[in-house]
Picture 1 (cartoon, one colour):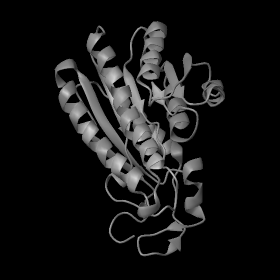
Picture 2 (cartoon, one colour):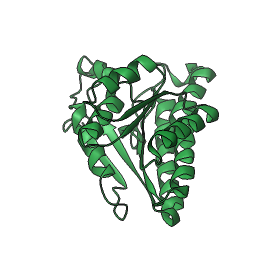
Picture 3 (tube, helix red, strand yellow):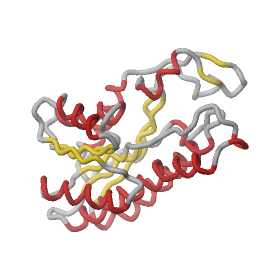
Picture 4 (cartoon, rainbow, N blue to C red):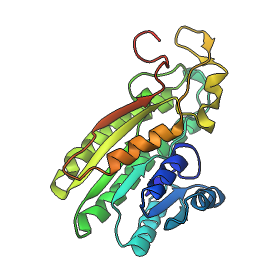
Length: 243
């Protein structure tokens, strides 16, 4: 199962899994975007379920549909997320914008993980794997990104708790922290983004398919092995050291 599968990292990961022979349950807000991803999946067995991951009822319906179609869920890639309004100073961030980012990035990830636990504990053979999409922002923030950064730090705590709580049930959980993958969301990187020292400067990006290959590697490990945290980033982006 891939959330946020209608574009960007989610679509790229879904297509990598399709190419490796996986059956796919694709979740996202827009049915047309999910169907477009499915059309690119080269004949893979694909189920598209338009889903608001902030709704417990919608998430329950998503996992019910996946079980009815495939009889089990072996992997959840908890990918759906939002950055929120860009360039807004902390003191000007509307409460509604803060809540929206928290609801999607944190609560949505929790609800999907919770539903995955319920399925994975009860299926035979028992177990499965959850991979959370964190971010470089789980380690270091960008200017004016308080909601996004706070939620991505929280996702790291979610990953650790899921890993611990999943041990008795053969449920493995890891996290991939991604920096500057080339998607619609990061298109502005190449033209210039605000840096910590106040400059606006372009940043390098990497091919999103490199992220997809990493997620596929994490997913195809036996449940006795786990990539707990992986960081995949553009080699020269301003993160390590002083840039």
